[in-house]
Length: 382
Image 1 (spheres, rainbow, N blue to C red):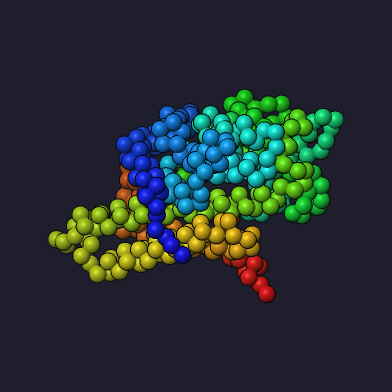
Image 2 (cartoon, helix red, strand yellow):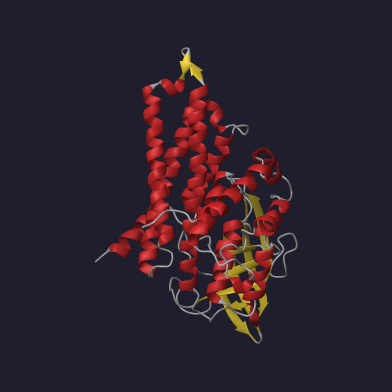
């Protein structure tokens, strides 16, 4: 397997890294997330108009650049290294991924808006009783003339307060945990002015992002809001979520690279007993262990990225393996970075504390370690 980047991919990496180094100051970003807006719209416009990364992995027929999973990995890793909170994964990976795979009347125009930076999506999938299994749905959708009527509740809808469009999963037939009978619906959305039949409670998450809990009560959508064929959305959801797992694994790698580099640099500067703490062998061993965990996470992420276009079972095994490996590494690297920085590791003023929070959130995003261990075991059972 060749892990060498092409010249175009190296240029993409350098362009994203250079843009973020010049335009994405961590202190300014943390101030923005605490404001009413919760993000930096000017940065998002820069992603679309200056960098073009919102369309880098989308097809050329919707004004994208036709890039692949490796391009997504490069972008996500650099976003993680800079601790970007803008909704790249929720919009470009999940939203555009579902639209591409399902199609429908609303898909192509909305994909063009995503590429242009004019649209942002949130995926309302998890429910209060569903745990990490997105096919465990109590939300229902039924036909009523030329409309769909949706009833149910969704929880931790990340980026919903920033979204212009909401993609909703609902059961149109079948039993509660069946793979068949799941449908997707796309609706224009404004969290500040929710439509009739929608109740929303928004909040800031522990990693300085935003999310919402949403309740639908006889929420009506036109017939064309349906994405793809009725009741056949699960394969598209599963493939898209696996791609999102690979993306946040790449993001975690970027976070861990930054955290490890900062920790090594701190150990060279912080002095105790008249010498840098980095000269103590026990701390050197600890940082080597952090490096080894990071390298394993990188390898697992590469395998997941290169398996995204493989058969569904192969793809699922690789992404679950990556999620387990990256989650373990995120916990080890994050916790040890905080410990090696001492009490100041958890302060708002030091970057490592913010990275630690994001790594902790990634550990549980799109399924816990236990969930993915069970999934991997099921997929490898004879």
